[in-house]
Image 1: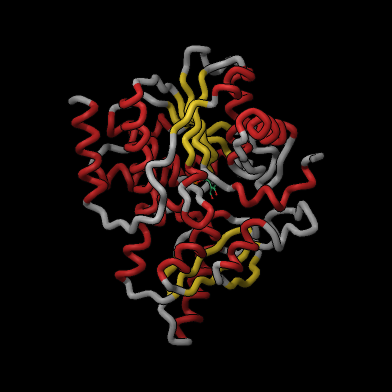
Image 2: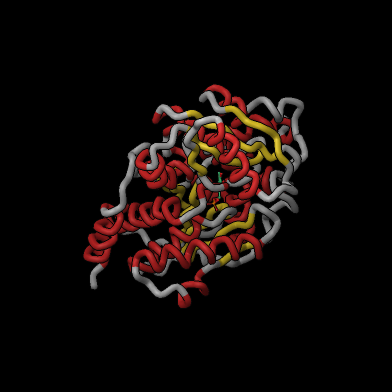
Length: 344
Ligand SMILES: Cc1ncc(COP(=O)(O)O)c(C=O)c1O
């Protein structure tokens, strides 16, 4: 079957799922010419999912496009979710709630990340959450996240509210369809420009982004290797979350999941030792993408993914004739909570 035909089929599958358009899509795919020259390795392109636009952008906007129709049809009047203090996922859920006229309340995991700057708890994403009208209550990383959300939902139900729980990281079947759609977009962009892409590198955490891309490229018959950079310092945890979502998504579009499991590549070497912490490699990636391309990446996710592109290139993992997409998944508002990393 030709790529054109496969693209048409995947488009039809995605069109069959209810969607609320929020993002500015398709996001641009652009060459990083100065960065590639500096790296002296493969040709690097950026897929600008930091520029999905709505609510300051990021990868969860794609997921929410497919989650929100279910929220609306459930008759909910309140979105509940959870995340760390500088969670991008929470910020995008809070933005979506504002846009569709629902309240948003979240469990703020207050003890996962050591505070970086003195205003870590009031700038960046959390500042935006407040502007979008979300409220929160602190919880601990030691608490069972789903139980916390269930209990919270019960509490709101007794007050007559109709809550809908958006899972941690928007990671479920509907959310991952957002990245099937991204795989489709990428296929269309590379086909129309006749560029060769061998690898795609991105920050991987709760799994929906990587699962969606792997299943999407497999469906389209594109041999692009998807490298998930572990940002949690828990590569096996990331692998198991990607696996879980990949299985349900593959079943959803009628692919056998077992043969796809080999395609899950998790690269553990760029996590800086802990979620929310940055190291020299992260800071180098942030500094050079800024200076060479005016491309802002953050210390928690996209900076680690770009550090992965740099490190893998230097280690000889890529050939110079390879074409690499760095998928910029967003997270830029968090950089304001990490100013002390940089001597600017
Ligand atoms: C900016 C950013 N990049 C990447 C990820 C990881 O994506 P996923 O959770 O779908 O693996 C997240 C998750 O919150 C994120 O906020």
